[in-house]
Image (cartoon, rainbow, N blue to C red; front, top):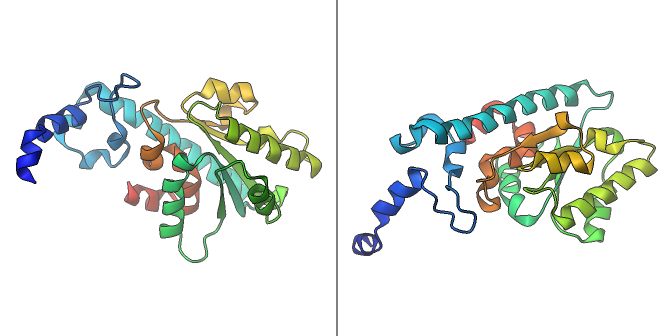
Amino acid sequence: SLVYAMEIGLKKKRHAFLGGERLNNSEDQAVLHTLLRDADNQGPELKNGSSLELALQPKNDFYKHCRALADSMESRDVPVNEILLVSIVGSTRGTQLLFEALSGNQPNQKIHFVANIDAHQLANVLSQCSVDSTLVIGVSKTFTTAETLQNLNTIEQWFIESGVESPKDVFIGVTAAPEKAQQYGIPESNVVGFPTWVGGRYSVWSSVSLSAALVLGKDKFDEFL
């Protein structure tokens, strides 16, 4: 109710949130994920200086990677039909919602969501794929998530057993710690970043949704934002 909102100081908290104050106490940083949406449709509090700049740069980089990946997917000898999104649940649900809600009945590519350590699930997914037509996207904020790395290792072995010598050269890493993805073996050109202030449950507007953006296309993803 309005009375309760006044009692807890909702208006003041809203201004603190939209003004970029450090409301994430556990990480001592601002909560700026709304900036990743349509910047021209934000309130005036979010249109000042460094906060907006922080958000626009990764978004611009994200679209550069989208364009490059879309071109490479089309230029491959065998077009990409399957995308493996390897992550944990918090960073997959939003992308899965986008894909299922907006991609239509017959999308150009199918996204498989590998979000747990269940070997049976991964084996079932891989049985539906071919290395020639599969794109692998690993998503981890720190790129140290044990479950995600183990699944990526299993997929890498699947590629190797299918005759691909250096699978990590064609893996895509989406992370807020690009140096960790490179240490894992993913080339710098295949690493897509996002800001550290993007949390898993609020990541749907960021490059975490790269796989859905590739399937939907820039125009539809822009409309979503």
